Image (tube, one colour):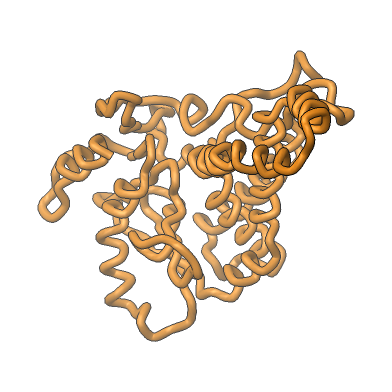
Length: 291
């Protein structure tokens, strides 16, 4: 597999970003915050953004029968989720929620849950959290051992690629959270609806496109918004009178502010952002640049 292993793993599926492409040029507007905090914006192709090198790669770490890095999570797990997501995404945009059967709804709930947990920053944060604990658990394991035992144990640890071990463990946790039947059932129980806007308006998206509970995030999830295209926003919410028509109308107006606020590196647009009567995109993008 080594020579043919995929290394470029998209955490934002290309079929999703395709909706923001210009029909003629086949690219989209990308607003990006670089490592120095500077704002860059240009037109780029979906395949050139929203990916991590070896983001979902299983790595050899010693003492197990893994001889070389493997991309099976990308090929066998995420590819299947994305294929199903692409199919349902098309149905939603062309025929609406009423066209979905039970199988479609479950595939879509799984795709949405994957979009929450597969993000590059989420994976990196989980890795960093484990590494912060590395010295603590190593000290705990060595505590109380005599010197020969400590030497043998440290020799064992030295033969391990701890970074690879942690990376594989984090991927396993992410997969379990994506497949979590309780989380998927909670999404299936929600009210699903689509908000469509006329052509002169447009929804932005970003590298963390599923927005949970408005700007507050967190769990449990009672409100979820997810742009499906520049002209269509999907909303999923618990059954309550609070989420009435006026509330949803206000949500659609401030959705782009939420997308910019939640972005970590990229904001995507179907057209160049300029200030509008009620929405000052320049100010919001500058705030995004400052992090």
